[in-house]
Length: 262
Image 1: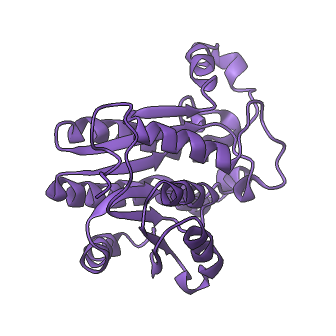
Image 2 (image 1 turned 180 degrees about the vertical axis):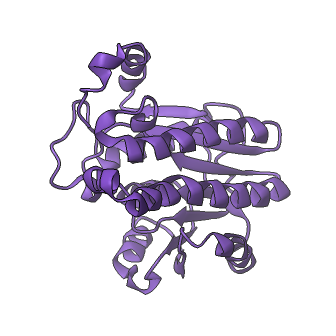
C-alpha cells in the first residue's frame, strides 16, 4: 500500500494513501495541487466549497488525473460553528485524512475596505479568522490520527504589509504567524504543516490587475507545493527568489516602503 506523503525520511517520494481534502474546492491552486497528488497516487479526493453541486468540471479534472473517487461537499469557511461537525462528517464518510489543503480566501477591494469597515472585517474574517478556526479543528483531527499533512497558503503580502493592500496583507500576516506557531506545536506528533508563501499569482483572483515582478501561475505554485510536501519541508517560497528578496525588503526604510505598489 502506498505510504502517506509525510512518511519516510526527508527527500523520499511517497504516495498519498488516505483522503485528500481541499478546503476551497474551486481554488485554482488547490485544484492544481490535488491534480498533482492524484497523478502521484492519491485515490480519494474531497472538494469542499459553497455551491458544491456545481463542482462537476473540477471533479472530472481530478478523475482524469487518476483519482478513483472525487466527492464534492458543502463547506462555508465563514461559518465557524460548522467547522467541527463538518470535519467529523468528512472523516466518518471518507476515512482518515492524509493531506488537507486550505485553499479558500478572498482578495477584497482595498479602496472599499479603507472606507467600509464591514468589508475590511469580511476580508480579515475569511482570510484569517476562518483559517484559525478550521486549522485548529483539522490539527486536532490529524493529531488524533497520529499522522497527516496540512498545506497552508500564506503570501509574501503578509511578510511585510504594504500600504497598497494592507487589509489583505494584515490577514495574511496573521495567518502566517498562526501557521508558523501551529507547525511548531505539531512537531513530534506525526503531523506536518507546510507553509506556502507565493508572490503575485496570475489567476482568477487577480484578473484585471497588472502582474507584479516575479509573478507565478497556479500551476507553478502547485508544482513547488507538491515538491516541498513530498520532501517534508516546512516552508516554501514561490518563486524561491522571493525569499532573499524579502530578507532585504524587511529593512527597507518605511518612507520608501509605504510607496511600494501592491
